[in-house]
Image (cartoon, rainbow, N blue to C red; front, top):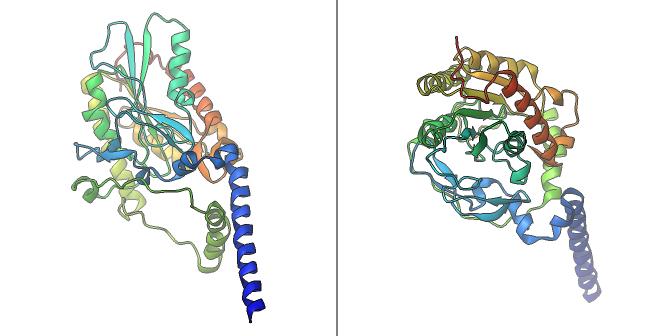
Length: 343
């Protein structure tokens, strides 16, 4: 009996050690040397569990990044200014020689897992200022992971306009920006969750679920639409009406403030049909539209993702975004104070 117990314990220890070695080896494969850093591995959690956000005083914005952060998020350094923007400090009053662009969006614009100097808007700012066009270009980053289309509108109204922008760029994320927000989210005080440890999260199990178990379940039981609590289950027509309403409000703001607004279909995955639907809604409301997903047609998504298990656009993707936006802004003469789009 003693030998049986001993053998069982040895087997148990061997299994546990094997699993730990497997997990760490997979982490090294995914994240390299960062896999040995507790701080960086704890940065891989969703933003809501990061301890990096707080409730917003404005119900149309719901939540925002905490001010004066100096942390990590998805392995990249994340710092915020005194206003909670992932950017340097700016004065509200705009100097006369400054052309100011407000950049609004979600985690693709924040951007998640990318150093701030490699973000598409930072690359644009650097490139334009190197050209010495007679003005200093400021791209103010209002991007926050988890924001949706309605929050973008709230940011334009209650934050961005206070900085007197000459141009507004909205990074439309097709992953969720078409979904209809649940009004309850905007009617109650947001409760920010405290930071949770992610170091002991199993990335092996996560990948097994995502790439093996879920596809197998779909194949056996059919497709299951997972309901996200932030969004209302609705039809494509309702979603189109919702987006049209938001774009209509943006169009009215653009016209009243004489500030062009460019909706950028921001994705490192190509979907021509859906992008065209968004274009029609945007253009019909007097806004500018640019689809930057076209160069990714037929490309391997992993090439342009921050790591294999997270499809957020990486540095390469941001560089491609920047190139296309640069060409578009020049083509449409939007880098000078030309006013809003004419009908």
